[in-house]
Image 1 (cartoon, one colour):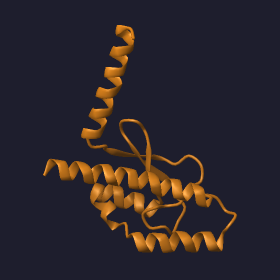
Image 2 (tube, rainbow, N blue to C red; image 1 turned 90 degrees about the horizontal axis):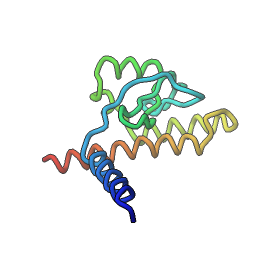
Image 3 (cartoon, one colour; image 1 turned 60 degrees about the vertical axis):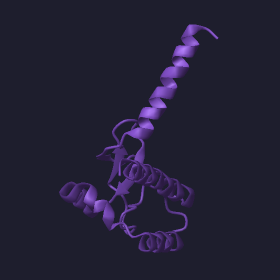
Length: 128
C-alpha cells in the first residue's frame, strides 16, 4: 500500500467518524418528482427537508406542514404521530393503488426519515 492510499483511507475514516459525531441540520427545498407528505400523510408534498451536509432527503412536506416547519422549526417534527401517519399512508395507497408515489417509494422515504431520527437520538444520548 502506498502512502497515498493509506492517506485516502485515513481521510475516509476520519470523515465517517466526523459525520457520526455531528448533528445533521435540515433545510427546505422544492420537491423533485411526486412525493407524499410524511408529517401528516394526507396531502402531496410540495417541499422536502434535506440534510445540509450530503443533501440526503429526510422528510417530504405538504404546504401546511412546510408552513409549520417555517414557523416552528425542529419543534414541528414532534407533531409526527407514527400510528396516524401509517393509517393515512395505507388509506392513500388503498384508495389510489396506481398513483405515484409507489409503495416502495413511500417505504424508502420512511426509511430516510428513520435514519435521521436514529442518528439524532444517538447524538442526544451520547451528549447527555
